[in-house]
Every structure is written in structure tokens, then in C-alpha cells.
Amino acid sequence: DVKVTQSSRYLVKRTGEKVFLECVQDMDHENMFWYRQDPGLGLRLIYFSYDVKMKEKGDIPEGYSVSREKKERFSLILESASTNQTSMYLCASSLGTSSNNEQFFGPGTRLTVL
Amino acid sequence: AQTVTQSQPEMSVQEAETVTLSCTYDTSESDYYLFWYKQPPSRQMILVIRQEAYKQQNATENRFSVNFQKAAKSFSLKISDSQLGDAAMYFCAYRNWRQGGSEKLVFGKGMKLTVNP
Image (cartoon, rainbow over all chains, first blue to last red; front, side, top):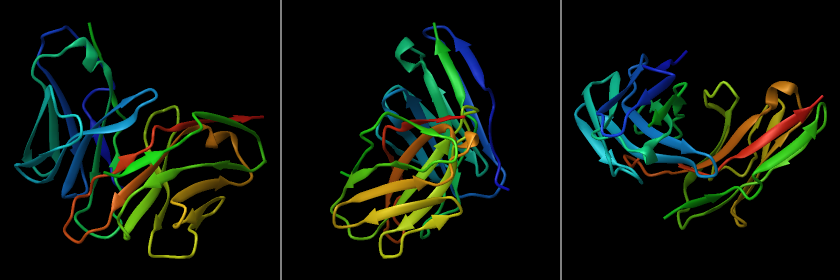
């Protein structure tokens, strides 16, 4: 089974702190994604990566950056956390650019910025 | 840009009964994929069912089936013999099909399903 893990289930940070959210997948997937999930807004794509060191902006990249130095790991970085970044963050991965690839999701990180 | 609309934010169903979750989408593409994802209270999102737009036959997975109406851009999910474990947030999602293209999914806002014993 594909396994996508995220470094923390719950995280509390202060405004202005630099925050790292880590995601690891164990199935050699090409693509990795970061979403944020807010009530009433569904899932919104922040960034995605289709290869090591490659990244593309999603729908809401402002205030975030990403890093993919190794194929299995995709990090989301909040350079200076703000209270409006309090949210649930979901990481996902998929096999590659092909037909109907399913995205597999991690358990999520609930981030609170005080 | 493609959009996905789930107009019902919440629904409830009695255990063992059938419930239908609605989803509409907007796209100018002719080839694409549609998905229903389930997110139980434990928060891990899992795929329930997928439909390729070029297939006329509606997808089914055990108690889950879809009613795909391409002309109407409608993609509803039917859950038969509802079980307590079906209680979750359900998200409808869309993806373009384009060889070598982006794997981006567009999600609806989700719908919370409650199953009453």
C-alpha cells in the first residue's frame, strides 16, 4: 500500500516564525502536492512538484514556498507564519503523468498560528 | 478554468438506506476524469470511485456508484445500504486529461454525510 506520512499531526507556532511541514511518500511517486483545507472552502492547491527540484505554483502560493531535494520528500515552508495560515495542510502524491492517476493523501497537519 | 460545485454542505441518511450526493462541474474540455474522495473523521482522504469522461458506463465500486451525465456536467455519487463507517466528508474532484499534462485536481467544497443508526 502507498503510504504518505506527514511529520506532525498538530503544530502550534507563533506569528513570524518560520515553519516547515514535511511530507514523505514511500512508493516512488513522481508527483507530490500540498493543499490547505478550510471549512467551506474545500481543498486548495498551494504548490505541486512533478520531479525532484521541480515545482509549480498552485492556486494559493502566496506566503508559502516548497522544497523537493529528494523524490520521496516534499516540504512546505511558511517563511513568516501569519494567523491567516492557521489551517489543515494535506500532502498528496501520485504515480506520474499518466491516465487516471489517483492521488494518495497523508493524514494532514493541523497548524495553528498564534 | 474548471470549477466543481457541491451545492449541499450537509446530508444525513439512515443506516441501511440509500443516499445520493450531487456534484456539478464546469469545463470546456472533452476528456477528463472525475473522482469522489472520502475523508473520515480521522482525516485521511481516500479515493472512493473514479470515472473517465470517455466512458459511457457509470463506474461502480461495491456499494458506491456514480451517475455521470456528461452533457449536463453532473457527477453524483450513490451510496447504497449506508453504513456507520460511511459518515465522512465527501469531495468531488475533476482533472483534465492531457498526455503529459498537469496532474492538478480541482475540488469541490465538500459535503458532510451523517449516518444515523
